[in-house]
Length: 251
Length: 251
DNA sequence: CAGAAAGAGATTTTCGAAAATCTTGACACG
DNA sequence: CGTGTCAAGATTTTCGAAAATCTCTTTCTG
Image (cartoon, rainbow over all chains, first blue to last red; front, side):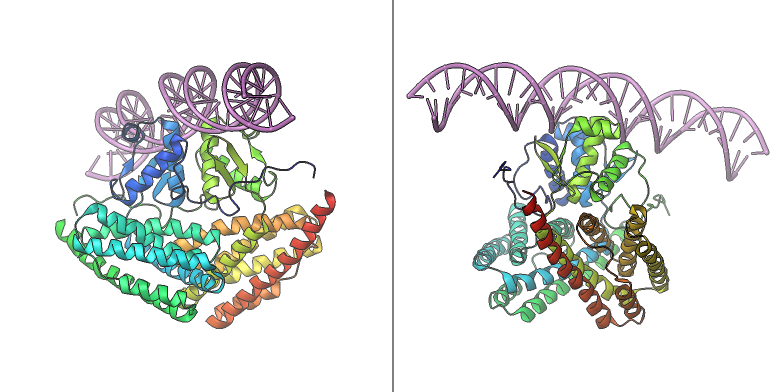
């Protein structure tokens, strides 16, 4: 045993979404996180130009960390960068939303299959508790449909539930892609809050999926999941028409 | 028609892998590209520390563009960043390689299904020509198995072939993930050149997949594709043992 | 001798200004 | 009237040095 190389903290996998883990210790990292949230929650408008002077003031940082943050978020697609022309908040595009949704459906179906085959005990436990947390948030939201914070809490738990579903698959790369896609999905979903009627009840769908997963019934679980996504897609299509009518009428 | 908003250059989708499109106009972008290549082609060792002074000299740039480049590549997972401790070339890890391979198998299967259903004429044409280019490179390589440039040319065309296979699916996000994963895969494959016997003939496998795709035979195409990946996975497992024996013997 | 504290040196991170590039609008020309 | 050129202003990109953080060795203490 010559030289014991100091063991790395994380096991392996892509260097992962910095956002959901812990708060970064550098300015750049923290700004990147804030930027992500501001975009997902529409505190920055889709298509808005992100000028350095403005952002510098807004986040109270110099150009270097700002620039680094912007690149981090750009790599994820939430902002788009053009050389020598600066950065722009990614536009809202329905086609992209459907693309993201379809990919998620495929990815999660794949994940759930692996999880059902290989998921260990703690996967089941986590999944169960994630569902209950989601359910609680769900009833809170339906009690007061316009409370922003409640809604945000529900969003977080909804993400956590789907994440828990996938987690058992044991594929860091898949979970990484999950995070990236979910950020976009959440952004789109929040966009629609402005236009849509609220709170489509989906608790029982989630419950059914979870039960199938815990029963280790691969086909049933995947079918329910696919149906879950297809329903979302249908709703999206309807909203699309609605929104397009609304914006057309406004001009 | 009040104000015609100037039409954006790219249609939609994630702001995509800057690497394969065109050379960036900023220093940071160019350095990022170079960095990617240097890592994929093992001009920078796995696990190697990337210090600013060294890299500054190597690429002849200041800290700002270097830092930005590093973040771009880190977002892709080819380098890992740790706050206040700098950047490191992502280590080689067999488990991760299998993960990447499995995900690719799933993603490409999904893509090929969509492509077969929705792919237009130009998809078929591109696929056919990509295959021929691959085949030519293949025979060049088998004629001289140790020529680095030939090998690199083959790699590029191999990527192009798989890309062409997926391209018809019309999902920018999927193609984005494809690029990211393929970079890692290529890196691993090149890593094994050092240890493995060369040039496993796979032309006929590629040809069979392509034919099935052009016949629009979904099931056949997907099955062949899966088999293609499984074969790779088996080879990888064997190599893994080999390499581990080799490195164990060396210490 | 083990373990904590402190300081020097190395390295990363951030800042502010200089350089490079893009945009806009005025002006000249066909 | 449309088109191309040029300069001024706005904005992004890059540089080099200052500030902050980490690492490693030494020293001190129990």
